[in-house]
Amino acid sequence: MDHGSPAGARKPAMTTFERYLSLWVALCILVGIAFGAALPSLFGAIATAEVARVNLAVAVLIWLMIVPMMLKIDFLAMNRVRQHARGVGVTLFINWAVKPFSMALLATIFIGWLFRPMLPGAQIDSYIAGLILLAAAPCTAMVFVWSNLCDGEPNYTLSQVALNDLIMVFAFAPLVGLLLGVAAITVPWDTLLLSVVLYIVVPVAVAQLIRWRLLASGGEASLQRLLSAFGRISLVALLTTLVLLFGFQGQQILAQPLVIVLLAVPIIIQVYFNAGLAYWLSRQFGVAWCVAAPAALIGASNFFELAVAAAISLFGLNSGAALATVVGVLVEVPVMLSVVALVKRSRRWYEAV
Image (cartoon, rainbow, N blue to C red; front, side, top):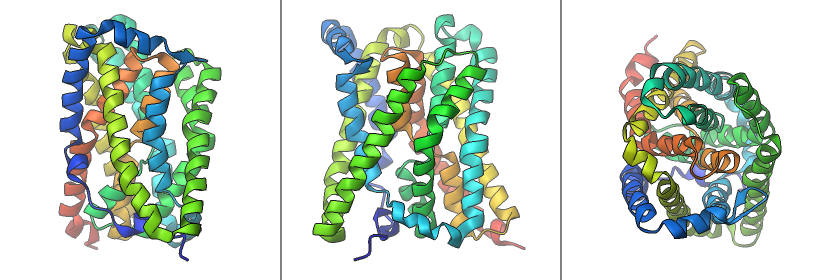
């Protein structure tokens, strides 16, 4: 039985739902704002349903988002890392040494300085924190889709995603704590560590146990059937979470609709910067195009489900941090599709000696 031929190697196609994710997110914004205005008591009850600062409704929804993502990851694939050592090195450098720090810098420049007069002053630090959380959580399972769209090497993509997720278990909390501290934002360490356990460690363990049991009993076909069913549940959970978030954020957004546009600016710049740097470095180090293309996409993509979960746990449902991570969800698909188009169009340039 081949436990190393998971979803990544099957080169999954992008579903219609995934392709139009930004449209569904936009609809959730409208629905959430409308529900928040019409049913304030319901949203108030949901907001107060907490245990140890963890909102119960949101925790369930986040698990429904993250566990299916983690089911796609085969940690046994890390034994293939050496086959593409230079490509792996580039993406590790971008994800852990460049992306979080470049976002912290961009957030400080744009949100903390240039756009400050146009944003609610009380939320500035929270917006910056949300953007930092977004960049500190690299490489979602959506990377498999992006890699497929640019004919990327599936084994490289799979091993890189598995390695990044393993590093994230240990590096996410210290990295977030460091960057928030540098930005002079108070770090609630107990809540941060609880978030890592709840939204990284436990989902990884549960997903890998389910994956192992399915592969042992029913093989790859059983795993794919579960992934297909869970994929739809995961997207519905994501959209439901967004409805809740915008139900709480509705009044702020109606008062200052420009906030979403302004928050999108550093996110979009950061995506193109990281993708471009990863692509250029891959060329400099002689990495094959079929590895360089997904390397650019892995360098640009964020684990936005985890970022949303961490922002809600650390700063609350109605915080600027939660809103900033949701803006990341809003721009993810169209921006990443444009990166796919750019790397495909530049293949001749990349391979020219």
